[in-house]
Amino acid sequence: MSDVSFVRTEMLPEQAPPASEVGAIGWIKHNLFSSWFNSILTLVSLYAIYYVLSGILPWIFQSVWNADSLNQCREIMLENWGSTHGHACWAVINDRWLQLLFGFYPSHLYWRPILALILLLVALAPVLYSDRVPTKMLIFSAIYPFLMVWLMWGGTIWGPVSAALGFVVGWGAYTLLSKQLSELIGLIGAAVAAVIWWLVISGYFTGAMDSILPIGIEAVESRQFGGFMLAILLGVVAIGVSLPIGIVLALGRQSDLLIVKYMCVGFIEFIRGVPLITLLFVASLLLNLFLPPGTNFDIILRVMIMMTLFSAAYMAEVIRGGLAALPRGQYEGADSLGLNYWQAQRLIIMPQALKISIPGIVSTFIGIFKDTTLVSIIGLFDVIGLASAIRADTAWNGIYWELFAFIAALFFVVCFSMSRYSMYLERKLQTGHR
Image 1 (tube, one colour):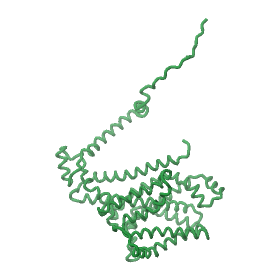
Image 2 (cartoon, rainbow, N blue to C red):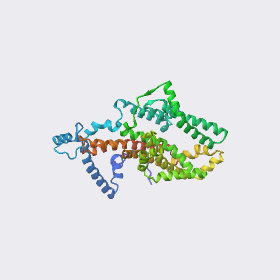
Image 3 (tube, helix red, strand yellow):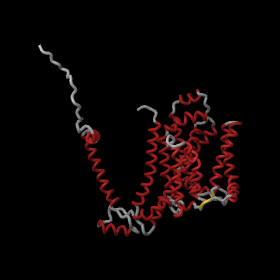
Image 4 (spheres, rainbow, N blue to C red):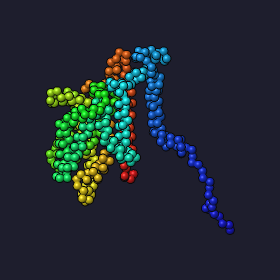
C-alpha cells in the first residue's frame, strides 16, 4: 500500500495579479464602472464634462490678446475664425491688468505694495509654519503691521512708530497694575493708557520727532488705492485683527461678569443682525456726522474698522462653538492643576477650542475676504469697481466675461490657498484615531 500526500511540499512561483484588478484599469473598474448604475453616471458625467470643456477651451485659447479696443478684437476674430461667437477678447486684460491690480496707485511706486506683499508672506511664515520657521521671526511679524502702513501710505515714519509705542505703553501699564492690583485692572489700565497715548500724546510725539529727525517717503492718498491691492489690504487687516477680537468676545460672552457678558452679547447680536453693506454705508456717510467738525477720518480706515468688527462678531460665535464642544473635564482638569482663569485658557482650553474651530474660522476668513468687493458700492475702486470703470470706456464698452473671469481667478487663488492651508493644519493637529 503506497502513501499519498495531499499537502504540497514545494512553493508555487508568485504570480502577478490580474491586470483588471490593479493599476489604472483596476481603479477605473472599481471606482467608475463597479455597477451598471455607476457606469451610467460615469458616462453621463463624461459627456457633461466634454460639453462644458468644448465650449470653454476654445473660448480661452482661440482668443485675441493684442488689440486696442473691443471692436478691433472682433475684427481679428472675424478674420481668423469667421465669427465673434465663442472667442474671448483677453486684450482688455493685457491692456488694463496693472490697473486691475493696483488701481490708481502711482506707477513709479508699484514697488511699495509689491514689497509689502512679499514682507507679508515673510511675516506670516512664523505664524503659519511655526514648526519650520525660527520663532525669532515673530519679532518681525509684530513689526510688520506698522511697516506695511508706512509702505502703503508713505509719509513720515514717526506716525507708525508712534502707533507702535501705544502698544508698548499699554503693555507697561498692564505689567505694573497687574502685579500691584489684579489682572482685570491691569487690562483696563492698559487699554486706557494706550488710548490716551494715541488720542492725546501721539500727535505731539510725531510732530516733535519729525522736526528733529525727518524720515519719510512719498505720501500716497487713500483715494489712489484700488484694484486687487485694496481687496488684499482690507482682507488682511480684517482677518488679522478680527481673530483676537473674536476670541475676547467669545470669552466675554461666557463670562460670569454680567456687564461684560451682556456687552459682548449685545455687540455680537447687533453686528450679526445688520448686513455688512449697511455698516459700510455707516462708515462712508454717517460716521463723519458724529465726529468733531474738521476731523479727517480716512475712508479706508473707516471701512477697515467696520469690516473687522463685522468679521469679529461671526468669529466670536465660531470660537464659542469650539469652546462649547470641549468636555467639562478639560475645565476641571485645569482647576485641579491650580491654574487661574487666564492660564487655563492659554494653556488648555483655547488651543483645543481653536483646533476644533479651524474649519469655521477659515470659512469666515474666506467669506470676509470675498466681501471686500462690497466696497465698490460706497465709491471705492476695488477690482469690481475698476471693472465697471473699464467697461464704461468707449474702447471696451460691452466687454464682460473676460474681466470677471480674471477677477474670479484672482480671488480663487487666494481663497483656495486659505482652504488648502486649513486642511493642512487640520491634518497636522489631528490627535484622534480614525
